[in-house]
Amino acid sequence: MRLIDNIPVWGPPDEGALSQIKTCAKTADKVSLMGDHHKGYAVPIGGVVAYKNSISPSGVRFDIACGNKAVLLDMPGTVLREDIAKIMDGVSQTISFGIGRRNQERVDHPLFDSPGWKCEAAAPLKQLAREQLGTVGSGNHYVDLFTDEQDRVWIGVHFGSRGLGQYLINARRRNLGNWPIQLGGHIPLRLIRIGGR
Image (cartoon, rainbow, N blue to C red):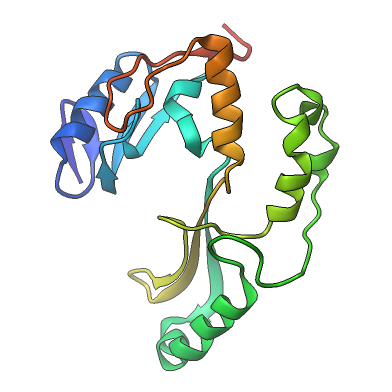
């Protein structure tokens, strides 16, 4: 990690992404660039932008329903390395990647009881979201097993919005005025206050 203009940057800096994160830093509380960063829409892909009491729909763009999670497993790295082929075969047979659903195990969650599903943009997408919960997606979305410096095993997941984010942000774009959507554009970061001062 190195600091560039007081911004933590992991990996070789991509000039387009660096320019975008500098723009984000003007309005955000904290920003950084992860190791796989590259130029995005208003926020670089791999950019982390934190606001207190605000969200930026122009910054979130199509990733509005994507997510990341890393979980420490109770498995030493030696076991992972011995059985990696079998373990990854199990992952690919159990978890649905890409378009569609490989397994038929439905996942339910209290989020479907949220009143947010009653808003005009989200209401028609509730069933789609329910069907896709528990799947990963395609593109840069993954399930990965890796070890840390202490040879502990972690599972990392970057799961996609599976189209939900694109539908929601396009509805929001229509309400706020159509923003340009070309990749790498310096579109304005629009902020929506969500409480507090």
